[in-house]
Amino acid sequence: MGSATTLEERIIEKLAQHKKQLAVKQQQLDQTMKELLEQRERLSAVAESRVEAVIMPRLEQLTRQFQNAEIEVVHTDEGFISTCRFAHTPQFPATVRLSIELLPASSDQLTARYDLSILPALMEYTQNAEKSFALSDEASLAAWLEDRILAFLDDYLRLETHPLYQKDNLVVDVVCGMHISFVSAATTLERNGYTYYFCSEHCKDQFLEKFEDGAADNEAEKKV
Image (tube, rainbow, N blue to C red):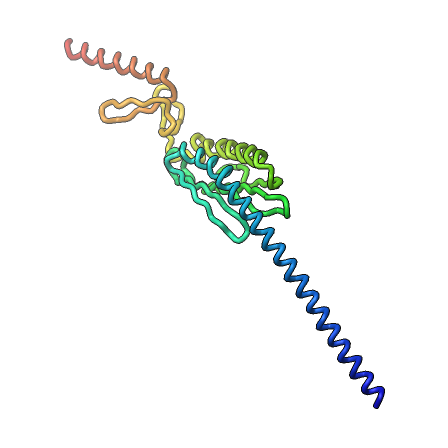
């Protein structure tokens, strides 16, 4: 009987210890989550300020140069995504999305992520890049972003002259025979309801000389 009583006491004691351990673990978990949430709020506040002070002004400087561009910011559970969308045009015949995402990397860092999508994908280009920055290092983030924007421009402007993208816009310079995109022709000329496209002013001048000479010959023939 005594042994049974001792066992029961030991069982009760073990259950009590287990309950106490669970309570300690729960307390630790509560404290950890409290710290994580406070850290997330702090990082989110810093990220939002960087979006407002660093990212958006620079993306707005970019989109102001293009009538087919629009910009938006989305706040996700992880961070902030600033996106520039460029609509398909004859000059730039592709649908383009440029995104800059800012999200927590650690307790004292933010990660900036660059994502570029060009559809249809008919050429090679840099699709992704990312880098982490100290929370206080706004200048380095700004410098990185400016480099990425300029790199994006290199890729985007290629659409204007890339043969695979411009194949539906090709015309022939009647003077030199060169195939050029009508949207990027150096100059044009209207004659008899027809538009002529030229790769250079020199070709246009030569065409005008021949056209005027031909017109003069026709007038001379009429007088004879």
